[in-house]
Amino acid sequence: MARPRNSTFFRELGPGGFSSLTIAFVAALAGFGIPVALRLREVRARARGDALEHADAVLVLGRELVCDQVTAVFRARLERGAELVRSGWAERLVVSGGLTGTATRSEAAAGREYLIELGIAPDRIWIEERSRHTLENLFNVRETLRGHGLSTVLLVSDPLHLARAATFARGLGLTVICSPAVAAPPAPGGAGWSLRALREAFLLHWYHVGIAYSRALGSERMLSRVT
Image (cartoon, rainbow, N blue to C red):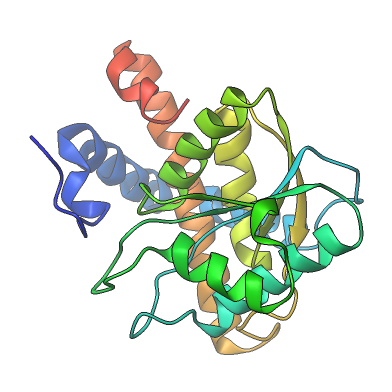
């Protein structure tokens, strides 16, 4: 059955996804929050990014549009990606993201338009328009990169998102160098930053619980969705 064009991640979790989410909650509570606290340290550490290296492509992860326009977070990601390409760290720039929320155009299409406004040549920009969340972004981009014999990417996102994105990417066999869009809101130290960091820590915890759960069940189908 075809997926709804703006279908959300949670609508497609399925029984295995809901089971792993429940186990993740239980594990976090039973461990008095320690499993999430450990992931929070990882989120904060990864937010600093990696030392820059030359790569096959820059990958800018999409962000849900508002009124069909790129948000402040997405603009910061795109501007960082453009900066890396202009500085010669990679020849190609890949923007990922499909139709999400109430948008009538894909995140990638909106991102491409903004990058062209920033002066990036259209023939240097590749887009991936099928995905609706981070894991799908990376899963589909992996196909694009492998189809062109590419494997190493400079991964661009807002700082607090990088730990989860990098973990997903490495689980999919991609070689990534993390480069944070430091201008992206929320500003460090505020309540918004702390809440976002905690959310990312739990999602990262959930991912690892899901991997362990899938392996314990011996479910190749569930593992194929995340590796």
